[in-house]
Image (cartoon, rainbow, N blue to C red; front, side):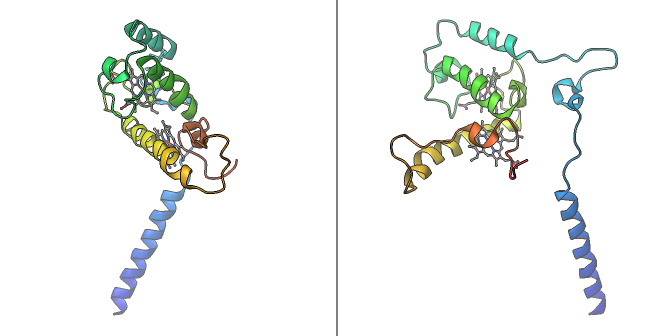
Length: 170
Ligand code: HEC
Ligand code: HEC
């Protein structure tokens, strides 16, 4: 009896320590530790992802097809079926990247845009679905909201330039 009590007590201490370690804020990472710069070798400048150039190449590759459905022009469109190819690129640049404060490579392997390799791209698809559900199902059911406009959330509402939305004011 006594032994099993102390074993349990020891276990609970351990669990508390694990929980505390989990809650500890992650150490602040210096700018240089960002994935884009991580491949840099001593003396060599990092092969930096050039978002403007990537977008210019993509715009060129869809030239003349900007107004066709994204699902026809691109290879792996699931949740963004309702937009045109031109709109898709604008959403990627001005919507997602800016809202999260990242560049394309946060969710994509540069140049291999259709790949679902990065978990962040998968997460983004879930977020897009959540967003649609909030706007189309949850907000319309809330009584007392002004009816002179359609109440909406978008990525910026929560993310405000950060990958992880804040839970507290700074
Ligand atoms: C927050 C994550 C995120 C960021 C940042 C992001 N994308 Fe995307 N991108 C996605 C998701 C999710 C899809 C798939 C949408 C779907 O399934 O309908 C996608 C699809 C695409 C596609 C279509 C690929 C294909 O052939 O199916 C292209 C092209 C693309 N993104 C380019 C970009 C560019 C360029 C940037 C930077 C300016 C960017 N993306 C930034 C999440 C992101
Ligand atoms: C209602 C608030 C809310 C909205 C709206 C929202 N997000 Fe999020 N997002 C979150 C929360 C909460 C997390 C989880 C953060 C964490 O890990 O604690 C998250 C996480 C993510 C992640 C994974 C984090 C990472 O490592 O990159 C991605 C990607 C993302 N959101 C993209 C989007 C995109 C794109 C949109 C717009 C279509 C969007 N989010 C809209 C609240 C939101």
